[in-house]
Length: 297
Ligand code: C5P
Image (cartoon, rainbow, N blue to C red):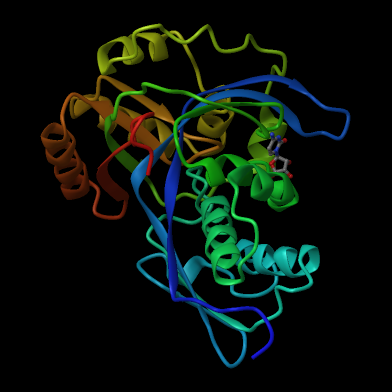
């Protein structure tokens, strides 16, 4: 028998990306913004399943499936096609299934994380190089967040997101993610920024237990929060709900509209999520935890 050896099905997690702090520090000549961001990944997220098939197929299921484009703009299909361009041996037809648990275009990197998970699953299925660094270099044209989503562990990202430094000894944080259902456009939020030359992140604290980290995060910002609040004032209600339900820190992730709250235990996060969901049945609300720097995912 000739041709690539196929294994499968291969399943890869596509965790939610959370910008615990996001400082916009400049802008490149091509319009992309320079960032300095501390990122963690949640246990909660999407899931990508790839298996050999008679012909290519792409199926989307899950609570947010209806909002996912299934044509050529989908990042999962673009990831598949990018691998085929780069590796001529990656020809075998594949059925890809995406379980969409994350709200679409919501600041938690769902599409980017799906693309990263698809790259990992297909690299395994097609016997291609699977090293994170190799895939990350390849992946940048799919979006500035895709390389960090390939790492899927706590990190600081600079440049437009492609300069990645893993952060060790990060505590696992008890989180609530909340999204009011309002759509925000990332380019629009970047355009609305008043200042593009903000100070970078301060040096990370040496001892990174949850208490120290939250204290450190208080001195940080998400520079996209003010322009996103101006575009979608309901984000303010999300932040207030998280704070009122006991979050030690509440902040928006990415360009929004998802906000996160940090709680002192998973039980408190679970109770807060239940209370917010009861008060706002139209919002997406979930309690989860972020992965620690040593355990990863
Ligand atoms: O790279 P991605 O497709 O996720 O970015 C969407 C848009 O967000 C870009 O076209 C750009 O307008 C804006 N962006 C930016 N600077 C970044 C990332 C994104 O200006 N670092």
